[in-house]
Image 1 (cartoon, helix red, strand yellow):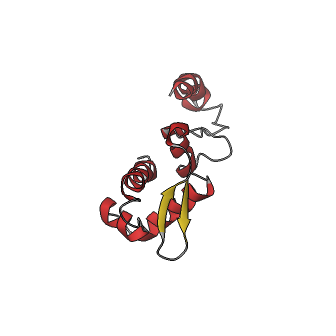
Image 2 (cartoon, rainbow, N blue to C red):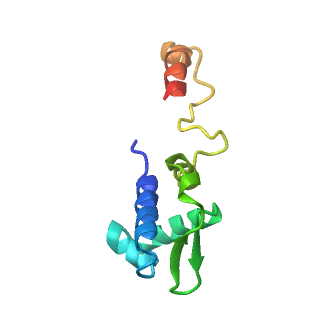
Length: 119
């Protein structure tokens, strides 16, 4: 399983917004052209960033700008905004009830739990 690219796309978007928003309107089309993805994906991530109060978006074709002070924004903040970790907030969601009659099922938590928690 590959982790999604939403985090790297969001980081690219924020970088472009910071560096370009004073010079031109940074719209979903501008972002999509720079990143090379469909504008629908860009709009979804823009919506997530806006909901988290990291950016503001002017109505219509007004473009995006950074709302939160960059000193107060971390890559972890961005990751948590765009990557859904579910209710647990954990990267790995381990199946809860492996079969205790199976030698693998009986031992899988013992083998992996600490390693996954460390990751």
